[in-house]
Image 1 (cartoon, each protein chain N blue to C red):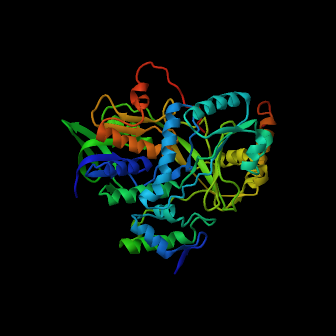
Image 2 (image 1 turned 45 degrees about the horizontal axis):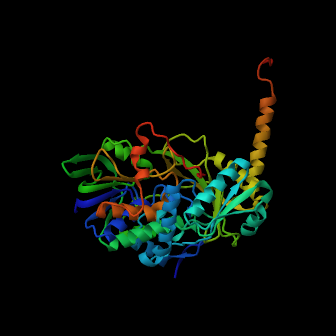
Image 3 (image 1 turned 120 degrees about the vertical axis):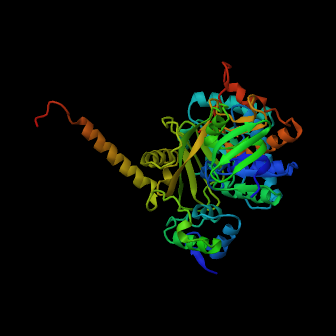
Length: 105
Length: 380
């Protein structure tokens, strides 16, 4: 038994089973067995999964349709997003408060 | 490759595959599903996965109730685990206007035999701990609503349909359509298909499919963004919706919280990129309702398309202009939850000529002319 996706504990057998059901892209495998849906977002398993697809379907790895890379880059807590949001709002307010006309160059 | 079919279904989302399955089950032979990319690559694979029966119009409520009944049977019938879970739906009311509307909805829903009730904020907090009950006035609660895994349900239908002989052609893009005497010609990037019956289950692209045959299908796609958090232990069972704050949120089987929101400023279009604005706004709305959960981490965000009609209700059945051209689109963000009932009705319609539930009100002709439109109000 080989673990391919370490975040979600997905084995090679499970990925091959998804391919047998008709999956031919990384996205389809991801949707069926959750490989690549964990905290690392497929950084570890994305290449391994495309290798398995290429091997099972006997096509070059360059023909395996690439997945979409989605934000955020790494897991980020709501409160951090909120803090950044408030900081930016404050900055925007400061900028708005500064008079734009009548300033000496 | 065989290119002559009795029925061709355009679209490999939940509507397409469920319609194919129900048609095959009703005895139709030679059915083909044509999909632009892969199964559930459009709105189905990007949706929140909930199903509810709490609607403001009778047509939607009836359809949804029939669907939920079907959802319960599907795992056994299709022989595939779909993560079907009746955890309920809790819909929050924040102001007097909403309370009045919800009272009307509940009265109508109960008259149709749905087990739904109004609950006090304190009761709502028992159902969904961590909820800031000070922000709400009332909630409606239906324990038989719930959620399902959209990918697995699509795959379940597709596998079962294949077993009944349905062909599913992926990566096949419809370029143009033509009808000569009684045959539709479907020109794609691969083959020219011929069929006697054509189903438009193209979701966000159903307007373009209609245009290919000079039929106006008034469906407009709008982007809706959604995110998922890291998995945590079980927090609550139901899907929580608030139209006032504008969000829906549920906990997946593996523990991640899936949440999304509607944005009234979103322009029409098929763009499905992610935005920073959404991440900010979603965090703000979520922490407004669940202040204690602000340390949860966002793992991934994505977007999909709501294919909206003017009254937020689907377009079903034949069209007046062209015979044997059936529509199942414009679900306005609720295709997954209505698909089991709708696909069955479509199959009844083409095999027997009538349906067990009235769908005349959902005919596309309601948008032609000056008739007043009754809009579905319960849309996030």
